[in-house]
Length: 93
Image (cartoon, rainbow, N blue to C red):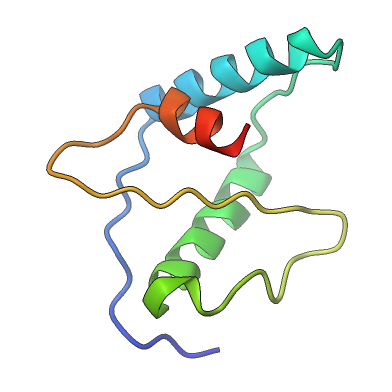
């Protein structure tokens, strides 16, 4: 699906990923779920998805075109400063 605007810039940093992972694992521990680990291939796929979704006005593209056995949590934030990973994770939670 072609986008309706240019993709938003990628502000993901290793620090953001580490903080998001730590927060997700803290929340998972509350429910006795095993911890997650970062996966470079899945991260690359997630970045491709984020880029393609950001090309759509108001998330019009939805969750179409996901790889098998993957889910998708979308957090959309804006501002002059990058948000910490914990903010995104807590919004999903």
